[in-house]
Image (cartoon, rainbow over all chains, first blue to last red; front, side):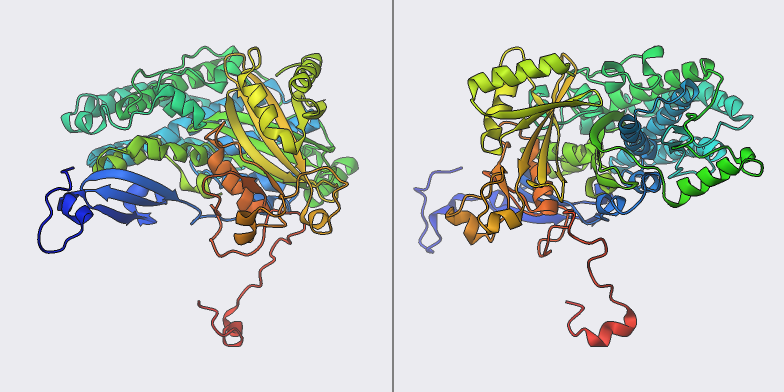
Amino acid sequence: MSTPETLDSAGVTVERQQLEPEQELLTINMGPHHPATHGVLRVIVELEGEVVRDLKPVVGYGHTGIEKSSEDKSYWKVIPFVERMDYLAYFFNMEAFCGAVERLLELEIPDRAKYLRVIHLELNRIHSHLVWLGTSALDLGAISMFWYCFRERDRVLDLFEMSTGQRMHTRYFQVGGVIEDIPPGFGAKLREFVEEMPTRVDQYQALLDRNEIFLHRTRNVGIVSRERLLELGVTGPLLRAAGEPWDMRKTVGTLAYPDLDFRIPVGTVGDGYDRYRVRLAEVRESVEIIRQALEGLPEGPHIADDRKVVLPPRSELPTSMEALIHHFKLVTEGYRVPPGEVYYAVEGPRGELGCYVLADGSAKPARVHVRDPSFVNLQMLRDMCIGGLLADLIQNLAMLDPILGGVDR
Amino acid sequence: MPDAPGLELIRQDCNAAHPGAVLDTSFDHDQAALLADPKQILDVLRWLHDTPGQEYRFLSSLHVADYLPAEPRFGVHYELLNMPRVERIRVKAMLAGPEATSNGDAAGAGNPAAPGSGAEEAAGLSGLPGIDSCVELFPTAEFHEREAYDFFGIVFRGHPDLRRILLPEDYVGWPLRRDFPVGGEPVLFTRDEPDSPGWYE
């Protein structure tokens, strides 16, 4: 900035005189309806020329009061509610909620249910990362990536449709296990997908890894130090891309994860390119987890045998009076959960997805709170963007991968 | 997760450093929790953050639960995590509700918003339950505390930007309190529109 000695005769104030036109701060409003914000996110950006000097995310446009509504529903009816928060990680939302309630009930789920849950969680992770890759590459101008990613995503959704009856928001996980066993033929179809997916990831990488435009847009952009990320509570691929090998599948190891052999991809610099590489490597590891879980899938029941919590099998209803009574009671009133509170977290595609459930002894939860990783991770957007170009904000937001349904809940 | 004896040790050590800071412990469902005095919440959090051997440096989540009809009714929960040891601990601080605050019933525990703090009164926040903000210690708490304020009307003193975050800024009420009814807003049907002048504003 020039020194204030050069005053002119037109009576322009000193500050005005100092600023070149491109140095004036300009506040612009991005969103809430903007194709690059991946949902209804509004960002108020202060610009000096093309350089971002400050920004504030404004959220809440998609707030639906799910946490409040959950307090008015019996436990099994809350499952479809929490699924709709982060609409790309519905299996993870279900797992966080069901896992918390299972801990409150001190209900152990059968081994087969653990493996089936892992298979579906990892398919969901692949699905979520594919949507992220397609839309993020689209933001950077690589339109064909979008079609390729959505082609594979559709295959994951076909698998969901086959095993659960729904493509999204499946209500497949139940407290105690999963609602029904996988149908015949699912294993073969899944194996086909597992065989093919690594080749598809190779193809994505062939398109993007050494793509000049992609490299220019992502390398050394949006770097935030590992220490700062930890202060900001950032988890998931964003944290791992900065070199911190924190993954709760490994460290906490719930469900069947301790039995499975997989690696945790980490980055080095923590720029946009690392974030991209870490997520793609995670897709490969997820494929590997699914392959192992499918091979090691144990026989046995798919849901716990606790008739006070779990619906009796359909086949018993015509012949067993008690089964019919319990079915009726479970559907109308639901089961009661002893008083207590639990915070249970899983490693979602975007980081730590935690669910806090407070039970007061009735058939409805007294409080359900979901710690959504998108909501917390969004706080790092400011650190990523300040001092960078406005065009990089789009890239940073894409690599941040917030799901606004999860942010707003 | 510290085990039950380890939790008692934490309580003793923390109380030795800050007398009366930890009121109680609980160990349910394999989850350890400290009940902290809300006036000393920052001391407890800072002690857990800095003391060698504790080093709970990561705040996973901050949320509030309303324990109505219990009094003090609001529980502010801090889910702390030590990443190298993979240990979680929950710190709870109980705050008295607005009724106990307004009729001057200071007998219950809790920490009503300090009367006479001019800034709070000017902002219309007097009478709301209050607790010290931990944003300086854990910058991640900024959004969490705004969310807690938005839904429960809990004032985090010292928060840099305490505004509503998910609800509209002109929203009246604290909807996640247990005494706020579900569907508490009247639904506007088309046939009622003429009876509600100015409904579109």
